[in-house]
Amino acid sequence: MTPPNLLDTLRERPLLCDGAMGTQLQLRGLAPGGCGERWNLENSGLVEDVHRKYVESGCELITTNTFGGTRIALNRHGLGAQAGEFNRAAAGIARRAAGAKRWVLGDIGPIGELLEPYGELTEAAASAAFEEQATALLAGGADAILIETMSDVGEASIAVRAARAAGAEIVLATFAFQRGGDAFRTMMGTSVKECIEAIVAAGADVVGANCGTSLSLADYQELARELVSHAGSRPVMLQPNAGSPILVDGRAVYQETPEQLADAVSEFLRAGIRIIGGCCGTTPAHLAAMAGRLIPR
Ligand SMILES: [Zn+2]
Image 1 (spheres, rainbow, N blue to C red):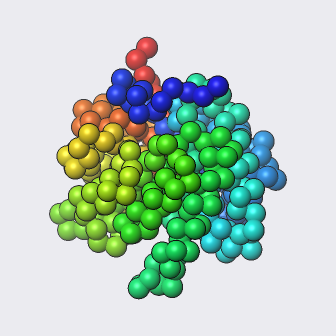
Image 2 (cartoon, rainbow, N blue to C red; image 1 turned 45 degrees about the horizontal axis):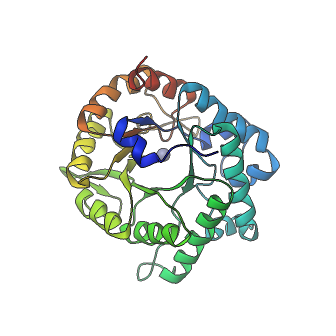
């Protein structure tokens, strides 16, 4: 049993994706800087609990706990050899929580190293790592692959093509933008238009933005309109942070309330966004408040 085709459903109605995972795992005891992907094997019940809270909040797209799950990223914890195992397990956990009517997005984040010529990571190595991760996520039961928080348009394009090569029928890809002067750009200086055009050419079905750390909700509304203007017929996804983090006792604290994020939802929908979720600092309470504005009752 699998949910209906995601792209068909998006033509009928907007959908709510889930919110942050990392901060939720930290609330359940994951040490800051610890390897969250390891919990897919060692603390699977707690990972499933986070997914269930988002399901109960009304989220229909559930994202696997695999943001740092490429072999290369896991190697920084000495755990690269378990990449396949972690990702397969994560997709299974998300599937259990999501059931047969919601969608499981197999989550892929940046590798965390610079590609040649700026760094030492080769395209072949990046591609192999992404394809290995996507293959394991799909084997574990993911319905689609979500490539997110990308700053390097080259890396994002490699990841989209690798997900396709792994057999993903649907690929979503989102970038982290910030304000550079009067325009939105990635940390590496790439414009919204260039990013969207590149990942569409690479084969992405859904395009968008997440994790704009320095962006206000007003910025996100402007970014939403810009994304939609460049996306053509592709559905656009937006996952804002709960505001910009401030440091309190050495910990990042996000200040926007569930009500503030919920108030932004109708503006996002008016801009043409089809998938709305939350990034850093969002909680099941934020998503529940957003669901109240998104889902007709
Ligand atoms: Zn984020």
